[in-house]
Image (cartoon, rainbow, N blue to C red; front, side):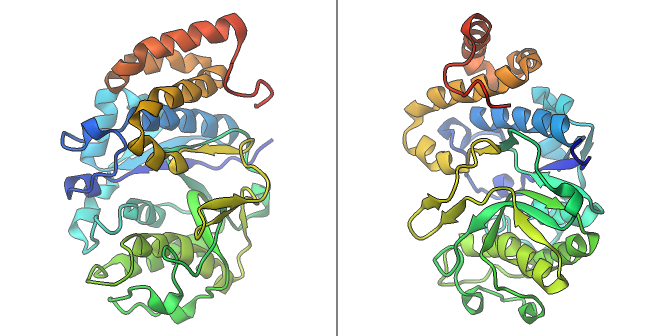
Length: 326
């Protein structure tokens, strides 16, 4: 039996409201807030898979995010919707730099154990070893590059004392982050928010450096300083410098869209094929989600594809995913 650990989906719309357009669906870029089709599909799968393997799922968002979820019928995915992220607007945290600040803020609001799972990631099997405690994250990433420069080169204009923590590990990708030690959770969340607050002045570093440091360097550094066990879900290692993977595949453990987003933006004609893949994976594992998908207004453009995939799966099973995948 897998350990019961509740999960949070975190959706802060502050970056959208501030003008950041990170969507891979160009039709959404200049209009009202919305999620692209592929992220809605992974969001639905993410919530169902986590509930099947580990426990309940909540949405932590703001009023705009909650209204969007309700309008799309996606509120049905969650045990609870918390709009605490409205309070982020009053803080000196620049949403154009810190587009994932909602995750750090949400970590201040809950006591461990809990997980934060990105809406573009879903599990294919339970995460192993949660009963051991500590801090579990998706995978390691290389440091000493343009995304993760040496610590002294990271902009720290608020003057946070970084010497308190031990920066001797690679970066921890936190597309899934499971907090099992409350000392670590509390110190990480406070340190991350303190680093982001008032730290948006000019810098020669790439804009992504501050957000990745606030999460993916600080979280493992705090764990190391506290003596908290930290370990990845998969041993697969992302080499930032060459944008290549090293190590065994993680495909049997989880699916993460992140690496496909730039490709989908560059070649939007590929998106329907990717939708087909995501729909097979979702409807093969959770066939009951089909009716929800057909009721979501933002999925109207792929409604015929939903029906086709349903019919094909019933007739001959999946064609794009492995039958043996749980």
